Length: 490
Ligand code: C2O
Ligand code: CU
Image 1 (spheres, rainbow, N blue to C red):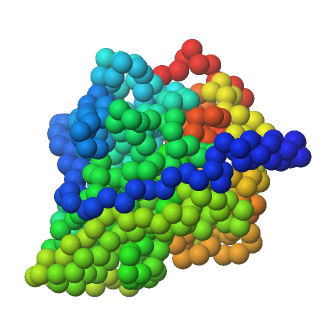
Image 2 (cartoon, helix red, strand yellow):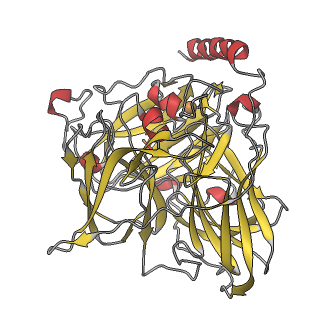
């Protein structure tokens, strides 16, 4: 099976050589930083008598003046583009009333959240036009920068690209080190996306295509093209989300300054990691703290990401270096405390705790030789079990790997211990080609043999074209299904 897959990959690459690779894709256009960075509003909520915090999200059509002279048709939650930032505390019960006012079905998935499968918002929890879906669950995981986005089968790329995405911040008052935390002041959401416009100024997924999707010539942050951020404090925390469908970024600053990486997908790191750059593939998050001096300007920049020894073509989002967000420091800055030396307790899950090891090989649009089938259960996991998932991409194409329900730890990569930036909780990890990533995780709390969670590549075109599988978590004595009955969905 492996040989066949490799051949297919080679064929696809050859096809790409004609269509995309090395064809001189136009790079990101430099624009002046003249527009104040939009900050997604914090979503209002109400608390019901039983203590449940309830948010409302409505998926709707809108328009944005992204490029000169054009009103670009967009989608957003509670607005024209993107959605409000949801925020809740560990231990709280939350509910979200998701209403679909679009002309087609969509779903909303809570990326990075530990929650029951029927609340997960994957392709089996579609919300039809005019309907409202109300998932509810208890927040039971560390403080983190999570996000939400649609997950309709085969349509995720288009729905996210049109603008449906937002942040979901989790706080833990009992484990809150002294980091900048005033939302919109010194704690800033930074949702980075690239877009391609057609001649009429509309978003297009047809032009400027690379193998995994569009590499847009326009980069925006929180929906702002050419953004600047006024900084009024000595240190600022940026919560970076790669909200692109295909492009991988390597974030740093134009003067090469060092900053502190304090958090990754599922929470804070054990200790800050001082560095000059952090690579984020689609879906990944990083929280960084950067210091500024009075009156200076410094720019968040993306440089060519190191995609591993094979996938290093411009067509995969490499090569170009471009500026993303200008920070403009006030001439008087309010003091910020230094970043604490210890951030969070992240107990390492021991390899010896794992009772099961599973293998996942990604090639072209398949995992272990199979494309996504919504009626097939690919893996059956037992509740309470610690597992090692050994994941590799045998393509020279870039992929990453995202698992629903759990936050995992990287045990090792190609037999080597993970680098400091991969020592915290992760739900999505970039797969350098031809390397073995051993991920360790514990499946707890939620079981349902009829309601699967997903695992997939988060390059959204890859996901849509089949690079996805399904697992269920079953309780003791429960049978292990191999199919699910889609009639009973939803
Ligand atoms: Cu961010 Cu399965 O998704
Ligand atoms: Cu992929």
